[in-house]
Length: 314
Image (cartoon, rainbow, N blue to C red):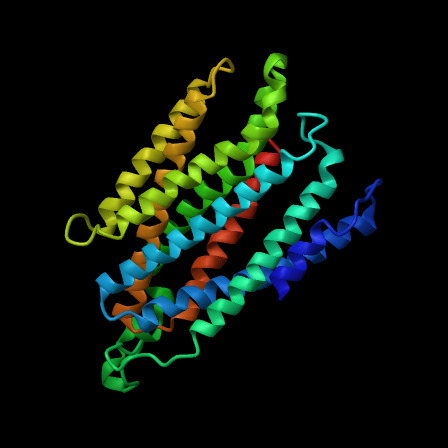
């Protein structure tokens, strides 16, 4: 409910002048949204090690979850593309499109609420007897020093760092790809009419590549381990960053779509691998999933916010 309310309120009213009251409104609204989002994300991720039968099963569940997440992102961009192409008077995206983005937000919120209802209906059944418990019996002999104080575990911080790096790469691209496309269009006035469609199709191509990669990762067991998958994904990410640094010609969008595909492959590979490693750490060491994922998610959001703030002030 916090996510649905917070997201829908973002486009609830079109403000003409920006003052301190409006800034406070958006701060409270985004805080509400982020609190709800974190609670949903942590509780959902904690289910994976709790119901998984083995590390292979945990990897499959993680890949399936990420595939569903990518499908949701693709749905957002498809809805955005369809809405922005309706009754086009100006090809440029601007304040006049406020009510279109409001319509997009309401549609996405409705889809999200319906999905949550289906999710909770699916949880009404009981888990089978074959599922392992998350923790071993809490006997003193079964709890070593690392189990009692997981904050002292080096592996914990390594996993958190890998997850944070993967999320940071994904979030920064999600934020700055549309801005990059808009800025790129201003340098070539002959192609400014194409920005409305490109601003939705380029991220969509990235998510399609991510979707296909996540499907392939479901069959990675026995071929590549999680660390190798993460290394491969990092390589694709570095390659896309190098291509962006070299520069993309404004005369064609082909290179832009190739870079978007590389970003999608990298984001999917690193995210699935880091989540699999986190779930394996939770299950192997017998820690509570909620606590581990809370720490990992906190690290992700703290660093991501700091990096975005740093970039905006450069």
